[in-house]
Image (tube, rainbow, N blue to C red):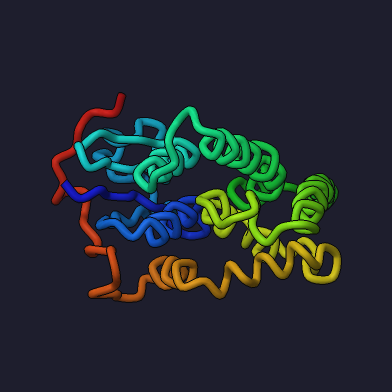
Length: 229
């Protein structure tokens, strides 16, 4: 079967998996999950009982959840084999992005998701989030002193960061171009990438047909769903 990626909107970290599929340039389909519409379709629990995106139905119909697992699976399809130095470096960078970088935004997403905080609580959460995100940006800015991509050459770690990195602007934390200029140039280069522009159009809900390896959207009720492991 053609692999199916389940992606969440708005601002889902699954954005990076769409970019990864575009870069891989092998046939795939997409299934859109509106994350703010509750309750979610109960059938999605057969893909991921935790009701989180992204999730992937692989070519053999097996479900995979969690961005790192999905991206490593896709990298393997692109020739990055487990046990090689290339795989180890990719796994290390993806793990950093999925933990330290992603977690830095936790206080900010708490404000977004929960609400109900008073002025002092809101200010504290924003300060904690801004300071931690700045620490991670400082680290990444240092990496780009001697390279153009996270691992020296473009990899699916860059695809992942194309989704996470846009959260800096979304939460209006600071001027990344002024404070971390190397990171700012990198993020702009990602924003100009055709695969990233495609993922942006997908998130906006634009109708796209006949685009490269993308074979269109599919609904949950049109799929034969396995039970998640």
